[in-house]
Amino acid sequence: MNENRENLKKMSNFSRVLFAFSALIIVLFFLTTTFPTSFFFTNTNSFSHFLATTFQAKNNTNNSPSSSSNDQTHQPILSHWRNPFIAFKGINDISPSPASTNQTVSRAISPDVANCGPVELPPGAITEPFCCPVLPSPLKIIDFNDFAKPNATLRVRKPIHMVDDEYMAKLEKGIAIMKSLPPHDPRNFIEQAKVHCAYCNGGYPQKPPFQNLKIDIHRSWLFYPFHRWYIYFFEKILGSLIGDPDFAVPYWSWDSIEGMQMPKHFANPNSSLFHDLRDPNHYPPYIVDLNFVVGAESTTQDKQIGYNLAFMYKQMVLANTKEVFMGGVYRHGDQAQPAIGSVEQAPHNTVHKWVGRADLPSQEDMGTFYTAARDPIFYPHHTNIDRLWGIWTSLDGGRQDYRDDQDWLDSEFYFYDENLNLVRVRIGDSLDTKRLGYVYEETEIPWLHAVPEPSRTKLERQAKKVSFLASQNPITKFPLVLDSKVSVAVNRPKKLRSKLDKEREEEVLVIEIVDLHSDKDVKVDIHVDDDEEMLSGPDKAEFVGTFTSVPHGRHKSKTKYMVAISKVLENLEAEEDEIIVVTLAPIVGKGMVSIGSIKIEYIPK
Ligand code: C2O
Image (cartoon, rainbow, N blue to C red; front, side, top):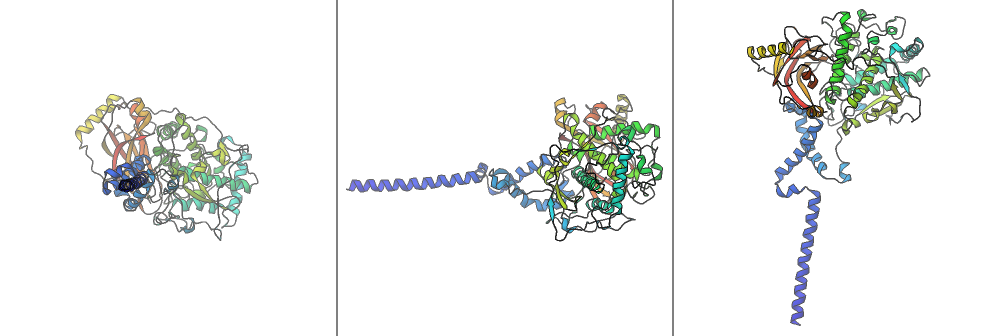
């Protein structure tokens, strides 16, 4: 009996222990699946540190060119709002369940379409600051779904110099009809131009809580996709108005030798393609200067073609990372204009300037964004820009763009389509032009092998460099107001990189522009290991690029300028050098730019 009781007692003690033990196991199991193991070995502070570093590390890979220590001071708004966000994003990063991945905060840019407001205009503006479209009431928005069927006829965009007068007559007719539509019809020519104005001069705020930040589709990764969609709807509207849905806007191929003049139809005063507010000196047979700036001395016409081709090579072939070519990462909550891409600087900005009236304050209409799209030549100009985006993506057997970044893919814009529907589009839906129903006619690319030559011998360059480093104080004080030419010694953290290294990472010269007068024309030429007294021309290897700014508004802004220099340093035989000498030559807008820092970064390709 006693023995039995004893056994029973033992049994219940045992089951109590067993119960407690299994409960402990369950709790432990729950904790380990919810939190990372490191949680158990760290205190709370280092846990939040862990979360923060997890996020920052991830963020840095997406943001590599902007991960400088100065960023916080340049974008003060980021530092305070990010903190709660860091923790939130961090938790999602480490918990794999699909339910929680859905909660990842999207930082895609999306304009607050219902809150469009007056834009900011440069001084002496010639139009009113109202660029917002009339919205349907009640507000009805449809998501873009008009993809081309797999076997549909594609619209073929051809170079203007290769299409006949009959084809150009269709373009003339379409633009004439658009100009004649009532003023508030979204298909009206000026209404179309205002779409560009609203997106460029701060008509749209970002969505809350960042409604104080205005969206700008220039100087960032939005540049190519925004303009692709913009031209897409323009083309569809024009095609429907002339009853030819297969009509494609031809492109002004200023990068080919035959295309280096303003297309003749645009110079005919009786054509709807003619526009008053243009520089009358630049009509044919004058050759376009892809490195143009108002007020600077221009090159002789016979040298211009060679200059243009070498310049194209630099802007397209040498600009071999997405940040350098497409512009900087720009997310919900970021200040506008993080960094401008190579072709957006020039030829994009420079051709805008070249077309506009030199004697108007901002070279209206093409020379500034609030009026640029009022000139019919805007559209073939941008069709060529859109074509160059496609060509760039296919260079070197395929270059990496931003398509693995969900925020880029999900960024949105709004346009009216040819049926007067207000349509919301995503960047992710614009990447394959065939799905949008069009392609470019392939033509020869004359600049593909126009490799720029150095203007001096290696010995001469080295002698210059040695005397520069000996004679001057190589430590330059930043911020540096660019009121005259200046040369700066820049350290190279790595020298003599292997072939593999160069294939993986591009050596990029990053110039932070901390104080840019947005209302002024600015052009700063950048040279490496050149002779400050006798700077090389745009067809030479020492001339590595140019920073240009088209007047936006009255505010001051910050941005970044990047040049890829791996190939340049090979050409200049400077790969072994610890220091390169960077010369900044303000050509126009002296004193209108301050430089925050100049350094070299290695950016993954
Ligand atoms: Cu949005 Cu050519 O400019």
